[in-house]
Image (tube, rainbow, N blue to C red; front, side):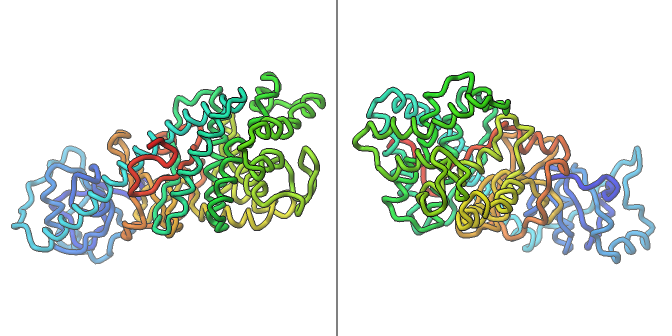
Length: 450
């Protein structure tokens, strides 16, 4: 797992290990019987289990080891640190004890949970790609005035609504998706899908009924459909953060009206969803557009979507260097909640994403580095994390559900500037963060056709 600062770790001879030493095993998590790569040796059985590993490099952290264990090493005349050119002696290994066998059984159960979680994440990635493709088709069809676009959008959102209304959905997935290879022309589809997912998560938090969740999701999915009527040069300038002229800004701010006109041409389009399309750029202080509406004049569903829309813009800026860390985005929005957004919706967003939003970089209780990739509905302080292990390929990455792995916990959140480049590259190579909802027992993504 992740290295501690070099000054705190020393390589140790396997024959000089003592009970009470805090060690790091420099091998993959699947290659040893222990629950973690870093731990304090608590018994002779654990000491024997380490020695059974054979040729593995072991580091010790003196600062986290029991002083008594270091004294024993010194009293025996041993220098526990490995010197250049030193060849480790073959240790005497006793027969496997019952404690070691129990340790292996527990590790086996942990590995099975890890493999299930890893497979779930892979399925979510695949489902997200399919949903993104399907969403792009919906936007194209609605823009062309084809009613099958609205039909498909409704079917997509109905499936997500069904998932969100399951009372036993204890561990729904809200994943950071690897969008490496993401193309600029896909941004509208990518953004609208994210806003839809975040909005529906918020809707679930507010206990919306099935119809309202459905209307919310449809409106969120198509909230920016009016941008199809805006000339590409204007959209590209805004996407790249370039300042718009007064005329360009006025033109762009017409897209909610264009969108409302487009969706209202379909007799089957829910009026509440059309209202979301029209109002998602309004602000509670009257500073929004197109009508400068204030607080009570804005629908509750629109207030939810405007918050989800802003959150995704902050965390998924077209220029990645300008994107905010998830926790920074939540803090920014919380500070400004009374100015432009509905305070209860901002609080709902914080409550929904918890203190560890997907994409948050963290240091674990064993000193390793990780990235939060999913939240658990009923255990928001114990999310699903991807661990960083130097020299390990992405195919063998360790993904753990902290709701099931109580031996490990999050110690603190980290700014990206606090994370070594190699760890950041490993954990977060994507340009953008995509969000998707999926349940543990669901074989396909909720948006996928059955």
